[in-house]
Image (cartoon, rainbow, N blue to C red; front, top):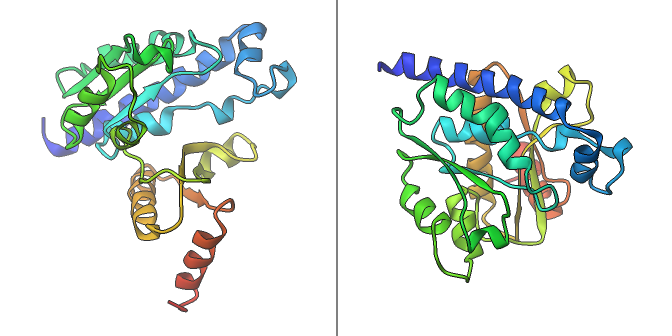
Length: 232
């Protein structure tokens, strides 16, 4: 498949998944929506904070080694999403032939990610880490390996970083539609910004705008603004 055709099929697969994912969240029963609500109340159910299409897009384009689908309360959430949105595009676009894998997690990983699934890019340089991490038989889960397999900047820390799909936020008239969320500590600011730039560049290819929210990380925010204002 020529490079241009590869890009086209990935965009088409992403767009189909994005549409099917939204349909899935809208089709859930009120009881399941409550389980996905942060406080278990239907009125606070917010699918905008649950959307996985950004992670799927990044995995399709090789920015991210894999996507982990799981929910700590609604354990059949991931299976429903796979059946209604991910498996249909996996089959329709023959993603297995294009170097992608889709599998359900097995014990002991299901103790922490019950009902979880992995969508992996076999062509990514960290694919071996993905297999090592998410097919382990060890009862001891290495969170650093999980972060690496998911393609997040490391190490973990106390500050939350989010990437926001500004285009989707405006189209849906929502306060924000987070695409990526991870935690970091102090330092490694350049690594974080380079990670964000990869995602932002991909979003621009689709004619969309992605922003970074580091409001919970004051020193990173100051560092970024100092660079922007030419003070560094």
